[in-house]
Length: 357
Image (cartoon, rainbow, N blue to C red):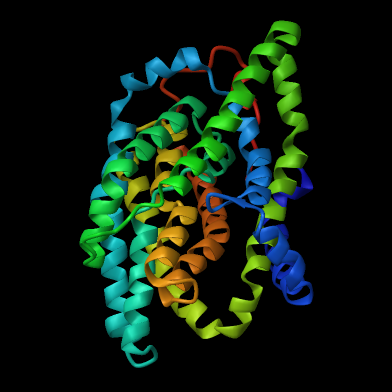
């Protein structure tokens, strides 16, 4: 384990501090970077996420995807958590904290806005960063790809009805451009690149060559993660400094939701006797959010300066630190689970692109 992996939490904390500091010192630079978008997807952040996702996509074997159906419990768990539990626990926590626990500190109109932002986060399961979290826990690349794909398919039909129900909005419009662009940018592009690279290098150098190439990408993957943190906090540095109290109040129920959903999913995965390389990604998918979609909907419904938009932004800010802590927890408790149900085709394949947290 290298120095970056060993002290990852320290580097992330430094990246957060650097992002806030640089965002205050050079706001124009971050505004310019934030403006490099396509359909609501920041292309600079996308490129950094590609660095993190690409090693995992090297492990995907299209011929093995058909075998995922032989382990339906992991898929069923992911779907149940994301669509039958997570949106409603998020809404319940929002109401509990902003209508009761924090009622004396937050104006009623602001409270309703914060609840709305939390709801939008709860109804948007992760599409991009979940590949990073799965990779950090050495998840089954094929299974994770199918889990994310199934969630994306359900999202197309379920996002608007569930969000509309919880928000009391009957004409909620899904920003289809953001949804489609995110799937293309965060799933299709790195998947195609990884599969083509795997095939090309396997033919020339064998799987050992692919493994060496993936191992060589570890520093770039770590750099991509840290630079993503710098950018995300740099983008919102002004908000963090201008409204620290609101940011903190929103972060508390969001963090409780994240740890609570992880505990539920992880516990159910253990009860279902899922192998660790399926259980860990299932818990990560249930915990993380598709914040690009949530932010876009919040802005279109309530406005750029609304409390709902602020709540979705806070979701972006806590995502990486919270998820990294859960990655570390999962890696420390993998002994609770069985070994993978079916071993990889070759010894080197299991190590492709893995990053130890």
